[in-house]
Image (cartoon, rainbow, N blue to C red; front, side):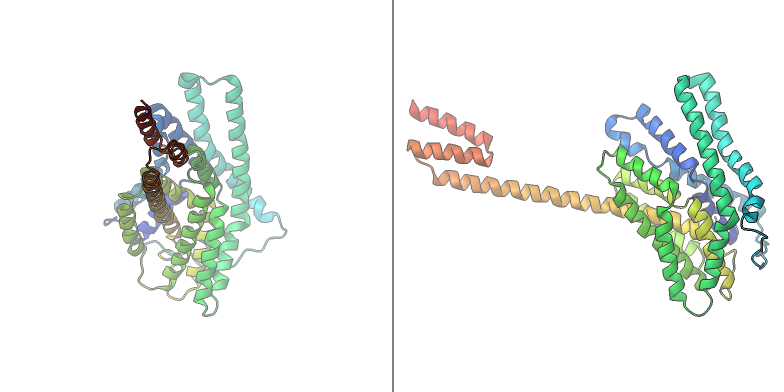
Length: 389
């Protein structure tokens, strides 16, 4: 990072979130789940199923920073302002981007198909019925991804850019920041891979970690991240590493006190939350703001929002883990206090009824049984037997 120009810092951390999207996330989660079941015990299975998406995101950061260190150039021009293109009809923009979307979607899905085919004929040998089902799933994935890319490139990205550019007209910075907050909150809910991850979390933990709770913490974290990205554009001299460095230091400190399963979930969520919706609409939104703010650089300031979105779940979900520890300790302490209180109450009541009278003995036995003191009941019955003899 020290050897790379500042512009590559933004590119690298944005790439870390953009590489783990709707295609790679379900595949990596399934791969991690399969390996964890083969190599770990049932007790450790849930803990080891998460974290692989985070490692994949880290690889993109290292690769782009290495490219920046090799090139050692910051002579990258900012994009020229251009008017919004005017099309002759409603579908012309989608027709123009359809060929490139078909090609890009094929390049995304084809490697997975090839790898699965090679493993199928050489190692795994899945049944024919299951193989057909897998290939059909990949076909539907290709069709859906193509439609999504056509929609994004044909109008969705330009919508985000226009919205950001229109919001900066005038001197209402607070309104732009608030708009970024709510856009970040609703965008992460629309991420396809987010629902895959939250569903996996709930299934693996058998309902101990609810998907609604994870989604709520994700939404709040991403909302603050987008708002912080907007504030960064308005703040001269505030670079991306000024936020990421203390942020990741905080993440590392929290990881020592957070349960391992929450650490893995947090790093996976960091890659999942910054998926195709964020990489298209939110990125275009911040670039539109950067293009309209005087003194802001669309390259240095327009990029970096994906990096902040990827950082936010690392903090919020580990915070959820710390909250779960505190709540568990409170419940444990409450049960201990209740048990001690019942024990003291039972002992006092038993001592009060201490007598050789048989009617009192019957009353004592019923009291001990109602309080659940099985050991005391057994001891009392032995003493009663000795007295009768």
